[in-house]
Image (cartoon, rainbow, N blue to C red; front, side, top):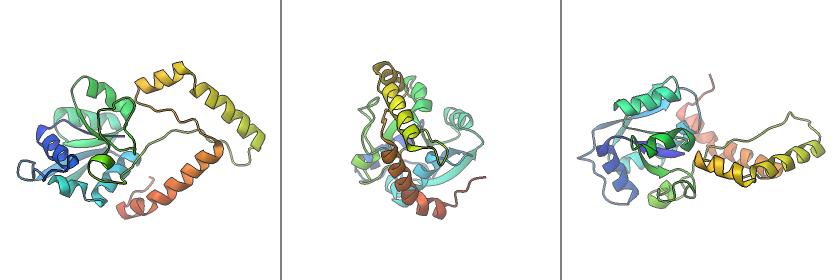
Length: 207
């Protein structure tokens, strides 16, 4: 996931925070509008984790959350200048970054993106331990026999590791993992434990 902005004052304030310099509190607007789409997702979690860790305060900005009905509306708001910054997935944001319409300030993963290696992580630049990662995975119905699970996993991982598949996904900002069923189950359990308190505190609900 990426932290993105279009407004130069927000870019200066957050970039200063990411670089560990004093916040540009006087040059940044008193209120910064952060856009988010209506559907609860990892973008929401990124917003609230950043708030919980004092990221906005360090940048000298007072954040106001502005909800939109869909991701395309969020992007439109950014391009119009109605929103100051937002979190988004690389697959959605890359075309706008490459065209120069928005700036990528940081990635929210623990390691830098292989697609944008020059963009720092929030963890390395300002907040050690910060990590919010969106992922996609395949699930089977409960009770599916283990031999079937193992066979599906082996076939899917083999396809994911084909160079043409890796290259195509990388072009869209996606890093391939292709782990085992046990590793994937452990990741799901870890994320549930990790985000439970943040989700409850933020009042994020499925509607």
